[in-house]
Image (cartoon, helix red, strand yellow):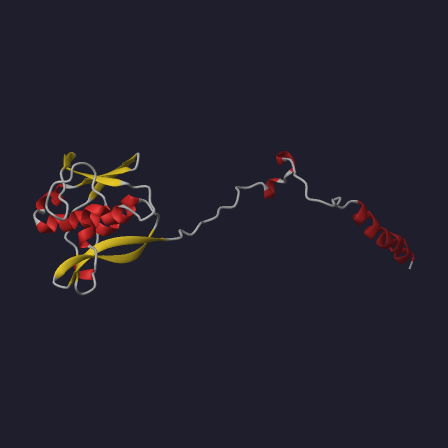
Length: 193
């Protein structure tokens, strides 16, 4: 019985001691110095993975309307809004994957080697396969590239092209070589209506 009486004061004092040894509370958050963080909590910072939010990309192909080929807009989701990303998607399109009646005139296996944007002029460096297209199909292929590369409200004012590193002349819809960078106005005759 005496042992029980001796324990009673200890049991009654325990909550008081525990409250007195607790971490002080603050009315507002405060910074904790790095050296005061316990080792168990001071591991690597948590990592987060950000989801890539796709952006709408406008790729241009051609379809037959009223017995003539006209530019046709296909919208896709791209990782970013850079002209090179849209152009890569355009040249990588498999013709058989396009809707019926829609075609691409960019030669198969054509690659976008690089792009450079300087003061509103985009230079598109194409692989040698692009050099194999000529005549009307060349006009249509260039129109596809120009319209895809120049977002309506984008930073691109005109487009120059190289094949194998050499600057090439590109034709407008009349077949005349364009003096300087090509723009959408050079191919407006290919728009529907």
